[in-house]
Length: 330
Ligand code: PMP
Image (cartoon, rainbow, N blue to C red; front, side):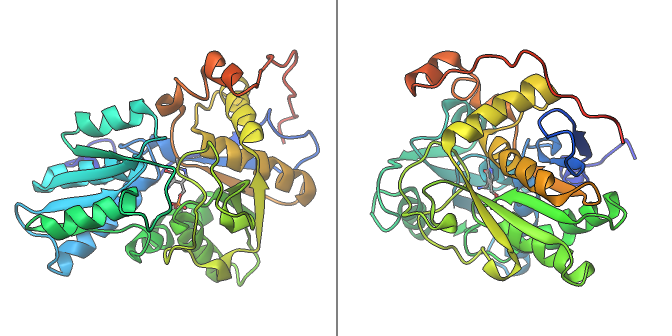
């Protein structure tokens, strides 16, 4: 199919692409699920579609309605696209560590964006989640879809991402590796893959070092869209076999390598997930088939992760590797 009646028909069915250079030569094959090829540029288009449909079906969202959501950008873009088709207004609240590029994208789609401090606890009245709750309560016809509590978030992955991966790997997938933010991706995809494989697929979460999923305190870290200060309802730990913490600098360096060596311009959470997936693939052996999910594009991070001055400001430097490691085509 190459002709569509609506942009939302383009959501999902993203490709799997083999990563050759950022994995060790004797590793299991590692494929990336390239979610930045969704029309809104991220995995979050999937949940936007399902959350809006569910809110309409429940009578929570009607003509002239407003969608309010605390989002670091990607869910906002997905919601903005879906809402635009249906004539809804969007208000998004974002923590102030979110890159300027992402906020500008939301505003370009016509959304209202409220910037909130990142360095406060979630229960603080100025946190981006508290502000979203307040706006949703005060404005007539407004609804908060709340990706952190909405079962349509993991369900969208159960019904789309999981089946796609199983089909695309012809049932040979052995390990699924993904970052955890709301936990929707890992919970829904993981649940489907566990069910369809009778528990054989190993589901591996990846967390920024310092966040609670990997046993941290919730202390600040640089990566956007992943990690949490507390457990959300959208996360189902029962389908997760292992959680690997990855430090900011390792995630950033892998993000830059992915662009330079495998031509995949992904965001920091994708680099973080690949850093862990490369380890999983190295340990899994050649019979395994590992898939890692790349949530969004690196274009939203050009002034940060891909900027040498920003990197130097963190005391980090990234000399280009002299010779990319190439593995034999198998
Ligand atoms: N990476 C980025 C850039 C994200 O925006 C998100 C979503 N917050 C994730 C990863 C994690 O996905 P999930 O919320 O499904 O756990």
